[in-house]
Structures are given as C-alpha cells and as structure tokens.
Image 1 (cartoon, helix red, strand yellow):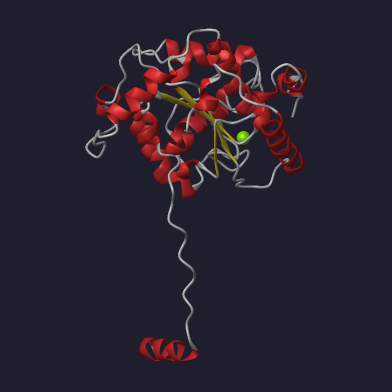
Image 2: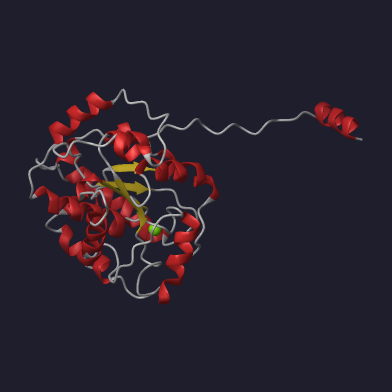
Amino acid sequence: MPLNLPGILVPFQLIIYPRLVVPSLIVKDIRHLDFPALKRAGYRGAVFDKDNCLTIPYKDTLVPELEEAWKTCRETFGEGNVIIVSNSAGTGLDAGGIQAESVQHHLQVPVLFHASFKPAYSCISAIQTYFSSLPRPIRSNELIIVGDRIFTDIVMANRIQVQGDKRPRLLMQSQEFVSEKKDIDLGSLDSTSTESTVDLKPSLSPPGPLAVWTTGVWEKESMFMRCMESQLVKSVEKWTTPKPPHSLDQWDTSQFIRHLPPPEPPKRTSVFSNLVSRFRTS
Ligand SMILES: [Mg+2]
C-alpha cells in the first residue's frame, strides 16, 4: 500500500483548522442513519467510503447486515446520486478499473475514479465535478459524506465545508424548511419519485456537506490509528469551540439518527423443554 501523502499532511492543516477532524454526526454504521430524514432536510446526494464502511476491507461485496439500509439509501437519494469514493477501488492502485467494476456491480452504485487519495483537494474536485455534471446538479452542501476514517473521510468532508463557508450560509432558511416539510409522507416514494417530490427550492440549502463518521469496524484494521483518531476527535471537541458561521456545529444533527431496537437476547431452553422437543422430533 503506497503512502497516502494527502492524509499524512493533514496534521499540519490541523494547526490552523483543528476542527477539520470533528464529524457532524457519529453513528455505529449506516443502519443508524435516517436517510428519509436527511432527504427531507435537503441532502440530495451521498458519498460513501467502501472498506469497513460498506464492505469488509479488500472485499467488493456489501456486508449482509447492511443490505436493507443500503437499499433504503439508494432508493431515497435516487439513481446516480449515491457514489463510492474509495482509496482502493477507482484509484491508481486499481489497475484497469477492475475492482471499481466489481464494486459497482455488487453495490449497484457508481465508483468514482480519482487520481489522488482522499482527502486530497484534487479528489474533492473530482467529487464536485461528478455531482455538478448530473442532469439535476447537486451542490457540495447538499451532500452527506460517510466513512470510517477521520483523516480521510471526515477531513475531506470538512475541507469541502470550509470551502463553502466562504459563501453565505443558509442555515436559518434550511431549519425553516425542515419544520415546514416534516409532515411529508415518504412511505409512497420510490427511487424515481423521491428526487422530485422532496426536493428543495434552489434558495433553501442545508448546511454541509454532512460529515458522518461510522465507528463500527467490520474487520479489525489499523486499530492503533483508529484509537488515535478517536482520542484526537475527543480532545479537539473538548478544547476548541465552534466558530460562527460554522453552521453545522450549531445544527442538531441527532434528528438524522435512526434508533434501532436492541437485539433480542438468546432464548434460554430448559432441560425439560429440550427433552420434549427431542421426543417430538424422534
Ligand atoms: Mg474505510
């Protein structure tokens, strides 16, 4: 694995912008994301990391536990509006784009080809070019960016956000929009109708992109670095204060968390019931 130079250089930028490492939202995995709520709030597109977010590292198939959530995500945002941006598939490491083809086939969404690793600015440009070239272009602040690594996925999302902060923010309009739209019935929506039915007016945009950190690990990988990243996030959150107009910091993103019922405890069987079931089956 070659060095990820854009990732290695991140600590130097943290001296100026320490909150680049702070996620907008933290969930265990994508099952805890309320995609219809994100759509109602004005988020129209999604960028997903692959390894340890959707798949086992270096595998191309979706983790089976995520199948329902992934389907909901794709149906909610619509075809072409959800993409994979990986630091393996679709990069220079992926000779001939073979892995990208395979991932695209298994996950049923496009894989972005990009020359530089996340969180490079040239990778950000490739993402922005993709979404701006869609039939219904999506702006960077209308994206959610989901991944399991702070120094790549979260820093990349926050770099885009810092770029966007140079433009006027529309947080208050966005909040008003959410309260107006909360009665929308999404039950009847499908992959084609969602985009048009729940769309925002051009002047009403959410703050973003939303940097979503998935902390669950499907297969142990780089655990020391993950631990360091986690400690860094805690320290930065403790010792720095969000600066207006850093509007995402002022927004309650907990509205996008889906609370799942706890798993059912395994059923205990008594010796007597075991004997009865054996008797019945014999
Ligand atoms: Mg990953």
